[in-house]
Image 1 (cartoon, rainbow, N blue to C red):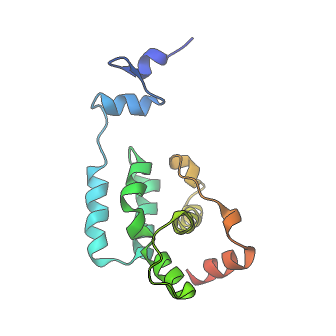
Image 2: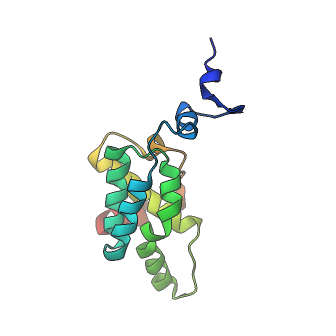
Length: 144
C-alpha cells in the first residue's frame, strides 16, 4: 500500500510527509529559531552559538535543520575560520567546505554529549571525519 498521495501537494510529490505538511502550512516554520540565532549572533561567540544550535536541534525540533544550518553556518564556524587564518598565516582565507566540516564535527560531538542522537538524525548535513587526522581530533576535543 502506497501513501504517496499523502506526500503530494498541488501535483508535487514531496520526499517527506513533513515537506508536504510544511507546503500546506500545517507546520510552524523556523522563524522563531532563526530569530533566536540572529539575536545570539550579536553578543555570543561561535562556541556558544554551536551550543545553542545543538540545543535547538535536540530539544526544539526545527522543521528544516538544514536551512537553519545554511543560514547560520558562517557564524557557527567563525572561530574555526579565524583559527585557520592564524595557523596558515593567511588572512584572506575564506569559508570553505573544510571549515564547515569542522563545525559539523564539533556540533555532532556536542549532540553526542547530551543525547543518544547523531547529526544525521536531523537531516542531510554531511561531515567527514576522514579530513582530520586523529591527533587533530584529539586536540580539538580537548581544546574546544
